[in-house]
Image 1 (spheres, helix red, strand yellow):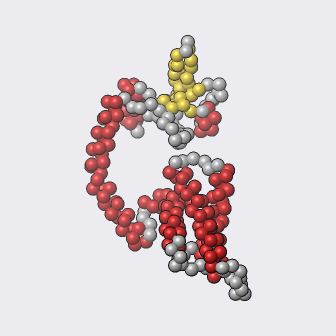
Image 2 (image 1 turned 90 degrees about the horizontal axis):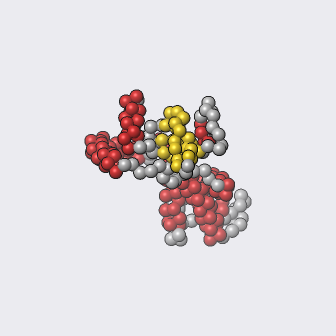
Image 3 (image 1 turned 135 degrees about the horizontal axis):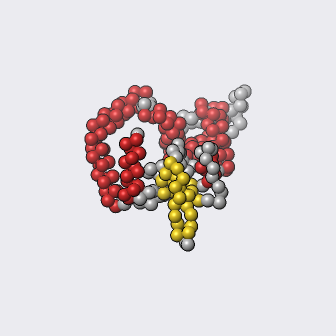
Length: 229
């Protein structure tokens, strides 16, 4: 670990830091033993873990070193938080990863084959369990969309409970029941798409989106036994 830290320090010394701006509220939440002021802008080097505060002197920005801190997470917001690497360093990184990927190709190929066989035998692989909720979301979204396509052909029936009450009396037509089921599937698909969006691009759902997720999950439970062609 110390060797890696010294190497990162060397890269920053030669090619410059990779600063990203951190709000003081974020630092105060994640580093409670430090003092942070709302009147100061803080910068953090993603490469060497150096935390500095930004000061403006005669219109020029200077960085006052505070300390080295190790954060478990960073407030990614979808935007690029730091400048590009130096062109020569970027070239070296690309060469390194090209060699690394080439050397690991046999191992990667073996794993892909193993996971493919596992999915065929039991429906999921060991890798899918790393984020099982994400994997299930993809399966449910894909399966329901395909089911809707099949149902659109008009050759599918509907659950009897949607057409008849407990005494067997007809309460709605097949067409009406089919429309109710398809609307329910749309809600479920929307809920799982929102859930999956948080895996693809980590973010917090809006209040409206959270309501859609809650309604979709309730609908999923309610119509779970009716999802078929």
